[in-house]
Image 1 (cartoon, rainbow, N blue to C red):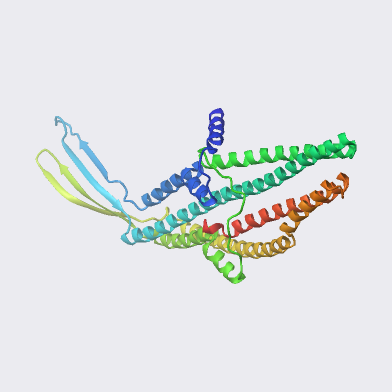
Image 2 (image 1 turned 135 degrees about the vertical axis):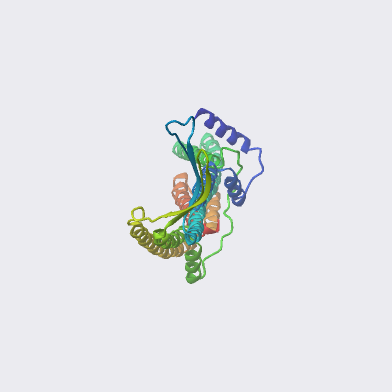
Length: 391
């Protein structure tokens, strides 16, 4: 644990000397370096190879039997049998098709894991952008408070201001410094999480503006895209098709297993060679396998239906949230709020407003700016979730 922590600290230190990266660069780096994703890739490959072995021939068998007789020194006679058992030929073709579908399921599940990891990384990037925006706002507040404190301390010495006004500014500076400390801690935590997702390799991400995103103009187009590309839905669909094929495979398990081989018998004065042809009828080993496969198919189909219902509900709810957030953001006139802050500062410096009146007004403006930053971040993360299958 200590070694991992030190690597993360080094990553944070080195990040300052790296070239700034955008979200796309960060996601590409995480896709290369994420340990969970690397492990999942290896597990998927292992599972696919295991599926392939299910359609392999059984191992050949070799039996040798020496026989001894009274009055004969050594082996009186012997028998050598070499045989190979195999399933009915049509069963191999059915299992090969089933294996391809099972491998598709594994690939789809791997894609779903990849998408989830990259979405988590993108959300961290979006949170870092929000924290950078909040820090810029806090820096502006702190600079403003420093300038006002210098002005009013001078006025206090000249007798043009009271101690309450100076103390009010000092309290504002304390509040801002507390929020700056909290912002720095949250930023460090988010960046450390991002570095951990990148295998504790250094990253540099200092963006304070969100990338351009495609606005939703047509609900039907959005619905069609999600229903056709959702990784969880595609994985459920592949699982249902694989389960249906497995029923077909198990229906053929009643066919007999065949075996062919070579037999050689020897005795003291005679040797004979021959072929071995046989088979086995699966009267007991295939019991209830078809019923089991059909039950699994029904379960897979129900899971697919449930995945579709959830996807449809998610599309509708996300679309409604997007519309609400868009309306909420339209209610905020950010340039007007910044202009108001400048005008209020000029008014208090000109003596047209008292410090108490000034902070009553600017606190409301700062709260609105903070609310807008939060809503915009919520909107960006919602859009990232809607278009997560594009990652």
